[in-house]
Length: 80
Length: 80
Length: 149
Length: 149
Image 1 (cartoon, rainbow over the protein chains, first blue to last red):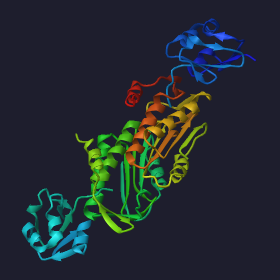
Image 2 (image 1 turned 90 degrees about the vertical axis):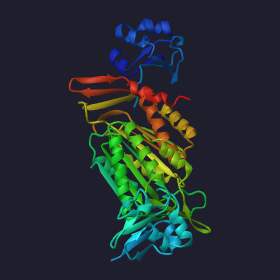
Image 3 (image 1 turned 180 degrees about the vertical axis):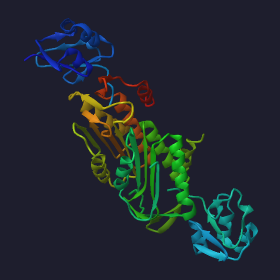
Image 4 (image 1 turned 180 degrees about the horizontal axis):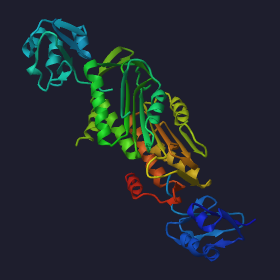
């Protein structure tokens, strides 16, 4: 069991993978420490949001995930 | 050859027929003389219009039809 | 095929017209379609629409042309019934094909408002006590006024 | 059947959904349908839509529910593609069934504006020089703002 990070849209391109396992617990600072370069910049952008187990966080810096959680990193949607 | 009067919508009910032949020429006064009762009243109403050979008259009192013409009496449309 | 306008006296299946209309416009962005049917409420047993050959179809063709121009459509399809219809039968079908969705949707809205209150049809409804001629509703005139230039 | 929302990963034929949807609502006055396809202009060879299982379908279901309530619909159908699509393939189908035409047309307009700019999809286009991620257009945000309460 771990925290699963899911990269959506262009974040998957920047990460080079569509998902990744991290050891929990994971908070916003821990996430920022984990990511580097353009991927870290994109995740920190205002319009990039975070969902935990399908619930979108109102404030992504309040992230608090534990082993077993799925943390999705959501760049701005382009719509259907 | 004659002038053909065509009664549309409820005017056909009031006339008891859907069309009728009259000897031409036919003007507005001649038409009014020809029709009676509720049918005459309905034709004189502002919202009832007249078309000659498929052309709707801007002013129905300018009617001037000759033998061979089709004169349609058009009550207010109800739409499709 | 920019304009396809038909006046039918027999029941029709909307799908048989919309498929070929869509396929006739390769490269389109979207197709909006409205199908109006005889409603089942309010005790109406049947509906009759009467038309006048020399005005009704030419009027619908002019309406389609003006929608095509106003909304920059690739094409417009109008199929309208005349005659006696029963609950659940389609009365009217309007489809607009366009590069962009808003134009297609607005063109259908525009065409329906005009067909409902400004086309050459006379309508009567059969209820338990017989046939009744129908006048246009106030709401239809209000709808039409939205499109005044 | 008030709400029918589907996320498909394979090409679909709009007619196969609209017919049964219409038949499932006897007594309706009208059905408005919009079908959006991959446009053929501007050098796009293919389009890919990516979705996120835990948000995309639930989001569309919530959208359908809110349209049904806001426009007093008898039913709403939303079918949306995900995956790689080519020119001419349907991307999205929205149908609204209602007693009256204006509600059906406005509900489709509302649902399409939300789907185009406020649904959980990420889009990229393949051009001669490769794949490009697409951001929402300003126009889409303006369209959406029309529906603010």
